[in-house]
Image 1: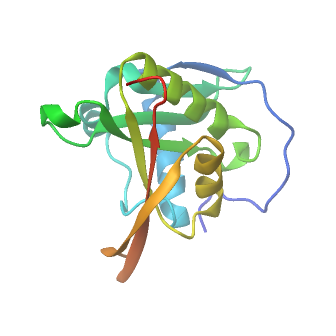
Image 2: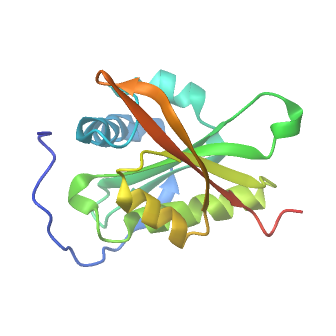
Length: 177
Protein backbone atom coordinates (compact mmCIF):
# COMPACT_ATOMS: atom_id res chain seq x y z
CA UNK A 1 0.00 0.00 0.00
CA UNK A 2 1.25 3.46 -0.89
CA UNK A 3 2.25 5.58 2.11
CA UNK A 4 -0.11 8.31 0.83
CA UNK A 5 -3.17 6.06 0.79
CA UNK A 6 -5.72 6.20 3.52
CA UNK A 7 -9.21 4.76 3.99
CA UNK A 8 -11.98 6.51 2.08
CA UNK A 9 -13.11 9.60 3.92
CA UNK A 10 -15.61 12.10 2.57
CA UNK A 11 -13.91 15.48 2.78
CA UNK A 12 -15.65 18.81 2.50
CA UNK A 13 -15.03 20.86 -0.63
CA UNK A 14 -11.76 22.70 -0.47
CA UNK A 15 -10.80 26.20 -1.47
CA UNK A 16 -8.61 25.74 -4.54
CA UNK A 17 -6.44 28.22 -6.37
CA UNK A 18 -5.29 27.16 -9.82
CA UNK A 19 -1.94 28.47 -11.02
CA UNK A 20 0.43 27.56 -13.84
CA UNK A 21 2.48 24.47 -13.02
CA UNK A 22 6.07 25.54 -12.43
CA UNK A 23 9.40 23.82 -11.74
CA UNK A 24 8.97 24.80 -8.08
CA UNK A 25 6.13 22.25 -7.94
CA UNK A 26 8.31 19.43 -9.29
CA UNK A 27 8.75 17.42 -6.09
CA UNK A 28 5.05 17.53 -5.22
CA UNK A 29 4.04 16.72 -8.81
CA UNK A 30 6.26 13.66 -8.71
CA UNK A 31 4.90 12.59 -5.31
CA UNK A 32 1.29 12.83 -6.49
CA UNK A 33 2.11 11.14 -9.78
CA UNK A 34 3.86 8.28 -7.97
CA UNK A 35 0.90 7.85 -5.61
CA UNK A 36 -1.35 7.39 -8.63
CA UNK A 37 1.10 4.94 -10.15
CA UNK A 38 1.32 2.95 -6.92
CA UNK A 39 -2.46 2.58 -6.74
CA UNK A 40 -2.32 0.64 -9.99
CA UNK A 41 -5.20 2.11 -12.02
CA UNK A 42 -3.84 5.43 -13.30
CA UNK A 43 -1.16 4.62 -15.87
CA UNK A 44 1.07 1.96 -17.37
CA UNK A 45 4.05 3.86 -15.95
CA UNK A 46 5.78 2.26 -12.97
CA UNK A 47 7.80 5.23 -11.80
CA UNK A 48 7.10 8.94 -11.99
CA UNK A 49 9.39 10.73 -14.42
CA UNK A 50 11.96 13.29 -13.44
CA UNK A 51 10.91 16.92 -13.84
CA UNK A 52 13.05 17.28 -16.97
CA UNK A 53 11.29 14.36 -18.68
CA UNK A 54 7.86 15.55 -17.49
CA UNK A 55 8.58 19.12 -18.58
CA UNK A 56 9.76 18.07 -22.04
CA UNK A 57 6.60 16.05 -22.69
CA UNK A 58 3.95 18.54 -21.58
CA UNK A 59 2.80 21.70 -23.33
CA UNK A 60 3.82 24.58 -21.03
CA UNK A 61 0.75 26.74 -21.70
CA UNK A 62 -1.62 23.97 -20.55
CA UNK A 63 -0.13 22.80 -17.25
CA UNK A 64 -1.89 23.68 -14.02
CA UNK A 65 -1.47 23.18 -10.30
CA UNK A 66 -4.29 23.23 -7.75
CA UNK A 67 -3.13 24.74 -4.46
CA UNK A 68 -4.85 24.88 -1.10
CA UNK A 69 -5.00 27.99 1.05
CA UNK A 70 -1.55 27.14 2.50
CA UNK A 71 0.06 26.74 -0.93
CA UNK A 72 0.21 22.94 -0.82
CA UNK A 73 -0.17 21.17 -4.15
CA UNK A 74 -3.45 19.24 -4.19
CA UNK A 75 -3.23 18.09 -7.79
CA UNK A 76 -2.06 18.86 -11.28
CA UNK A 77 -3.24 18.67 -14.88
CA UNK A 78 -1.28 18.80 -18.11
CA UNK A 79 -1.52 17.97 -21.80
CA UNK A 80 0.81 16.52 -24.38
CA UNK A 81 0.63 16.37 -28.15
CA UNK A 82 -0.69 13.16 -29.65
CA UNK A 83 1.26 13.73 -32.85
CA UNK A 84 3.68 16.17 -34.44
CA UNK A 85 1.68 16.01 -37.69
CA UNK A 86 -0.06 19.30 -38.47
CA UNK A 87 -3.41 17.59 -39.03
CA UNK A 88 -3.45 16.74 -35.32
CA UNK A 89 -2.38 20.16 -34.04
CA UNK A 90 -5.68 20.55 -32.19
CA UNK A 91 -5.65 17.14 -30.52
CA UNK A 92 -4.00 16.59 -27.15
CA UNK A 93 -3.93 13.90 -24.52
CA UNK A 94 -4.31 15.01 -20.95
CA UNK A 95 -3.64 13.83 -17.43
CA UNK A 96 -5.22 14.88 -14.14
CA UNK A 97 -3.76 13.65 -10.85
CA UNK A 98 -4.97 14.52 -7.35
CA UNK A 99 -3.26 13.85 -4.04
CA UNK A 100 -5.02 10.93 -2.32
CA UNK A 101 -5.88 13.06 0.73
CA UNK A 102 -7.52 15.70 -1.50
CA UNK A 103 -9.79 13.40 -3.48
CA UNK A 104 -13.54 13.74 -3.29
CA UNK A 105 -13.26 17.50 -2.76
CA UNK A 106 -13.73 18.77 -6.31
CA UNK A 107 -10.04 19.30 -7.08
CA UNK A 108 -10.03 17.11 -10.20
CA UNK A 109 -13.13 18.84 -11.52
CA UNK A 110 -11.60 22.28 -11.06
CA UNK A 111 -8.40 21.17 -12.79
CA UNK A 112 -10.19 19.53 -15.70
CA UNK A 113 -12.46 22.55 -16.19
CA UNK A 114 -9.40 24.83 -16.20
CA UNK A 115 -7.73 22.57 -18.74
CA UNK A 116 -10.81 22.54 -20.98
CA UNK A 117 -11.06 26.34 -20.88
CA UNK A 118 -7.35 26.77 -21.56
CA UNK A 119 -7.22 24.38 -24.50
CA UNK A 120 -10.40 25.72 -26.08
CA UNK A 121 -9.08 29.29 -25.85
CA UNK A 122 -5.98 28.08 -27.71
CA UNK A 123 -8.00 26.48 -30.50
CA UNK A 124 -7.53 22.87 -29.44
CA UNK A 125 -10.55 20.93 -30.64
CA UNK A 126 -10.08 17.52 -29.02
CA UNK A 127 -8.99 16.46 -25.56
CA UNK A 128 -8.46 12.75 -25.20
CA UNK A 129 -7.59 10.39 -22.37
CA UNK A 130 -6.83 6.72 -21.98
CA UNK A 131 -8.32 5.41 -18.74
CA UNK A 132 -8.23 1.93 -17.24
CA UNK A 133 -11.81 0.55 -16.97
CA UNK A 134 -11.24 -0.04 -13.25
CA UNK A 135 -10.69 3.70 -12.64
CA UNK A 136 -14.38 4.45 -12.08
CA UNK A 137 -13.75 7.82 -10.40
CA UNK A 138 -11.82 9.12 -13.42
CA UNK A 139 -14.41 7.78 -15.84
CA UNK A 140 -17.20 9.52 -13.91
CA UNK A 141 -15.24 12.79 -13.76
CA UNK A 142 -14.70 12.75 -17.50
CA UNK A 143 -18.30 11.90 -18.32
CA UNK A 144 -19.46 14.84 -16.16
CA UNK A 145 -17.07 17.08 -18.11
CA UNK A 146 -18.57 16.10 -21.47
CA UNK A 147 -16.21 13.32 -22.52
CA UNK A 148 -17.52 10.27 -24.32
CA UNK A 149 -16.11 6.79 -24.58
CA UNK A 150 -15.11 6.17 -28.17
CA UNK A 151 -13.82 2.65 -27.65
CA UNK A 152 -11.82 0.20 -25.64
CA UNK A 153 -8.31 -0.71 -26.61
CA UNK A 154 -8.28 -4.34 -25.51
CA UNK A 155 -5.10 -5.83 -24.08
CA UNK A 156 -3.20 -2.76 -25.28
CA UNK A 157 -0.32 -3.13 -22.85
CA UNK A 158 1.14 -5.17 -20.03
CA UNK A 159 1.08 -3.76 -16.53
CA UNK A 160 2.83 -5.67 -13.75
CA UNK A 161 2.77 -8.79 -15.91
CA UNK A 162 -0.93 -8.64 -16.85
CA UNK A 163 -2.58 -7.42 -20.04
CA UNK A 164 -4.73 -4.33 -19.46
CA UNK A 165 -7.49 -2.67 -21.42
CA UNK A 166 -7.70 1.09 -21.81
CA UNK A 167 -10.88 3.01 -22.53
CA UNK A 168 -10.31 5.86 -24.97
CA UNK A 169 -12.32 8.98 -24.15
CA UNK A 170 -12.53 12.26 -25.99
CA UNK A 171 -14.14 15.65 -25.63
CA UNK A 172 -14.72 17.59 -28.82
CA UNK A 173 -14.83 21.31 -28.19
CA UNK A 174 -18.09 22.99 -29.17
CA UNK A 175 -16.19 26.30 -29.09
CA UNK A 176 -13.69 25.37 -31.77
CA UNK A 177 -15.04 24.81 -35.26
